[in-house]
Image (cartoon, rainbow, N blue to C red; front, side, top):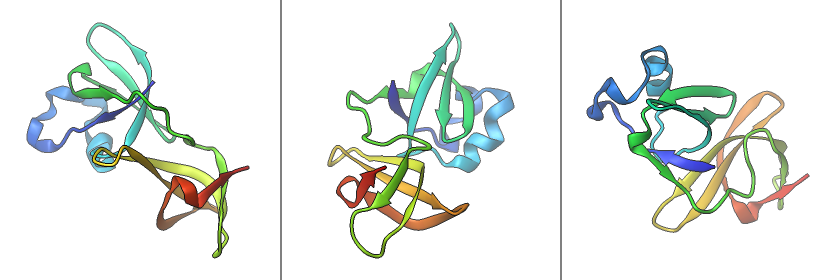
Length: 122
């Protein structure tokens, strides 16, 4: 299951497990797509790329559509300039209901964020 966790420091830290507060704040989660991987009575476990976070379920908003690509998927650009790499970041634009993706190419994160139609799965 994929979803958004639109937390900012203004909400306070009670929504984030104490062991994850600093790294979750550095991630700046607003607009990023998380994969929900586990749930207990008090916390849910979310994955973002290679990181996992325990957070309160109160702010999690499930997305009813799944992104075409997920973390670690091998892709290439559909048109020049050609890039080939792994999906490192997945973003969701709520106003347009569209996903956008960022790549790591040769261990270097590209600055450009790609629309779905700009990428081809390998």
